Length: 67
Image 1 (cartoon, rainbow, N blue to C red):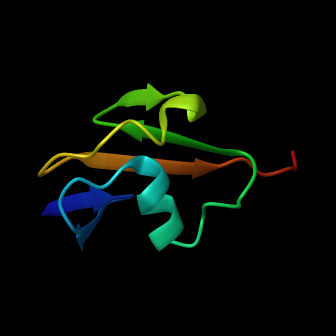
Image 2: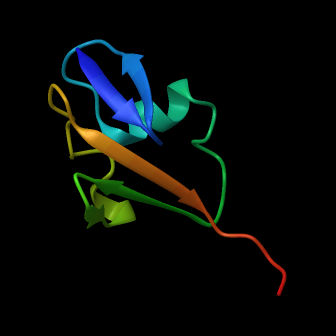
């Protein structure tokens, strides 16, 4: 299945959740991240139940400190 993560094409297995994707990308234990799928922010409590579909466009944003 082809998806796009932060403007990069990825090939993943079918029926992968956001949480599983973050694990594959080694971001599962990262704090301060937000995930949007097709421009819709997905709440963290839904990451394990929100499954990705072919051609989904995922944006992963990490909060940083600074000014």
